[in-house]
Image (cartoon, rainbow, N blue to C red; front, side, top):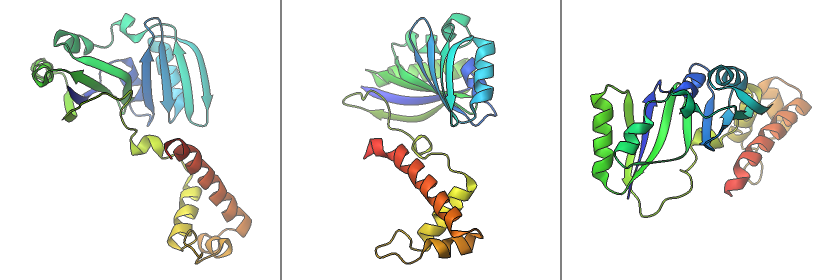
Length: 213
């Protein structure tokens, strides 16, 4: 078996929903509706998805959202790439990903020539496609490995600065080589504020990484 990660620019309403927003979407299709997981600025994405396919329900919190659509995107005929995969017996593995106006597809084929033929047809029809990676696989995992952007949580600028200052100063070495008071003095805040920035940054990092430990 062979697996390829293919990115296509400007294909489909969900790709359009991420353009210029800094948001990322994962899509699972249930054949009746779409389930979208959104990370980043959620308001513009929800608004654009509502206009494209309708929103049945959504939950938004802390720059993350889960959206259930009224219809499947494929029912609206706004995505023209899937037929290429079907034509060449290539399997499109969920979830689909959208970011920065692009659609990212994880494609599986038993014969590598099928992937080559599919890519050739896409480029012949001037579809803006890029092969991000291609490899032989012995088995297929349920989902690709998460990217660094997906693992690392969003920290405020103050949280990042305080965490970096603490690390550079040796706060996390054993034994510690600095104190929260010294960190606070270097970034120009009081000790309690510096400690609060550290605790919040540490909490976000632990929550994001604990599932991979």
